Image 1 (cartoon, rainbow, N blue to C red):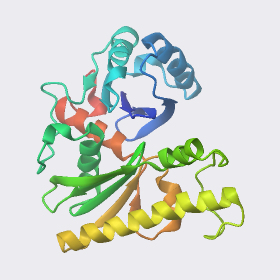
Image 2 (cartoon, rainbow, N blue to C red):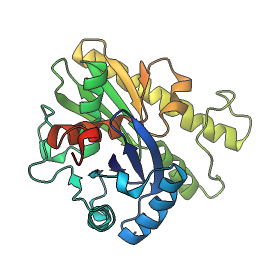
Image 3 (cartoon, helix red, strand yellow):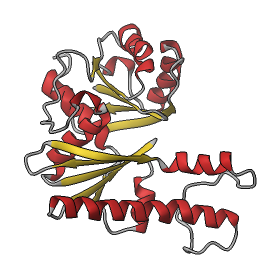
Image 4 (cartoon, rainbow, N blue to C red):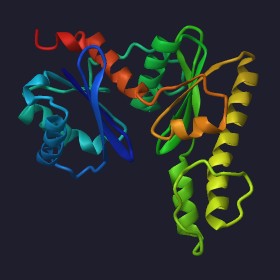
Length: 263
């Protein structure tokens, strides 16, 4: 089995892939000072709960937008799973996504992984909308090349900014409100966050399509994608595991199929 780790700025997702699909996924807050021992104690209990033995893990791959976590995640693989993790961005690790971008080194690993998995699964001419710490739009053309994108503040950042900057506004959950016009402070904030971001997504997708002069297939990913899909018919597919499947595909291209690990 393969342990794939997607390290975001806010959360880190651990997933076990058995060669056919994900046997389990778990999420933890990203913390650069968390030690390999702490990761292991947490992960071991979850694996036991899912009836996954430690010896079943024969390979690891890590994609990180928070590089300060990599030292301890490498130690996790070396110390507790007796394997050298494959790290996206390390010399010799091949992703094989064509890039038509002014500064290729500035593209986050997660965005290339999304482009890879989306093109492999859904074909050409794609817009991948990822609801993470930032809300990103990544465009894949007819040849599967990454041609650029858009970075907007994430919805949770916007919600926290309202709370921090306005003394009388509370923290609110991100959810679809019953109506657009709020009848109280919390419903009004939820409407602004939810419908505001739905409108942002719909408006930017329309502008991208106008600029490219073609209709695009829109894919939603990230933890909040199922919530925002409730507010628009824009998404052809909602795929929360897109980045993880990109990691699995990169492992396959560099090492072999997850089911072949250790053979």
